[in-house]
Length: 342
Image (cartoon, rainbow, N blue to C red; front, top):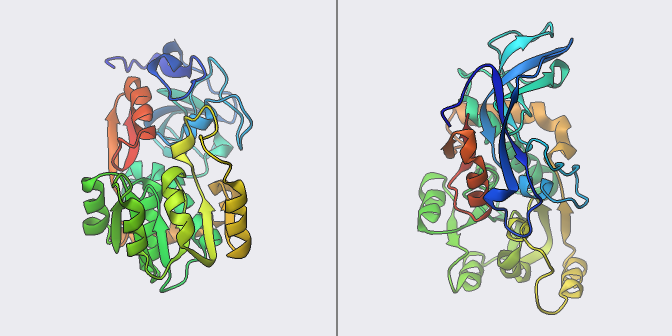
């Protein structure tokens, strides 16, 4: 978009609630006057916007862990933002902060809510939206607090080339586990195996995927980090060991569903597995463990500086391309953490 004028805010709002897969018509680009910060607030110029699968759920009207985005409201999203006007004593013009500025070029925020200033000398600014931010923290706490992975165990990760899954697998390896990654396509498999050091990388699109997974896990599965659901979970379930742990982070295969899957009700079978194999299945949101965030920043900062954790970013240019990029992300078309450069 040629429009980056300093005297107005460009934003994308929710125009309609999607029926199934979102379309471009569910979003609307608008222009508005710049907001004015009140006492204790700052005016932000959003520089980078994070796109994440959870955004699809926020577009629905149903109950979830966060309130739905209202029709006509700005789409939600984390941002790397620059302070361009401040009425807060601890924040100054030019400071770079991690914010929740949404799908817009400018936002007003409460200064007390901006608890993390960013320093590009420590890590690239965009990592605050990925490996060194919410997705990385999600991987960190899900694996440690729910997965409780031990050296020598087998950890299987769905959507393993994404920012959460890639981090899960690498942390598991750093702590002595065997990491099996599941992704879509040969390029992503090669990335997991050759760049990130996964022990095995599988393509969930392969006709014999379930057989490949069984061969890759001869001793069963101790931790399954769930990002996907669908056919991947179907292949994992029979391989879970007694006392296996399943952190449920996402179910992207179902986010566009408008009805229950066809076929018999398999809930009794699932509950039987949970009972007889003593499984721990817990859904979580990273904020459940926010007390561990300082610990995460210290440990992940060290891993990044020592190049023990690697990451990949999928940079999209311009706010107007965010709807298309989110639709592609939900289809699995991205390769790495999706960030929109505003």
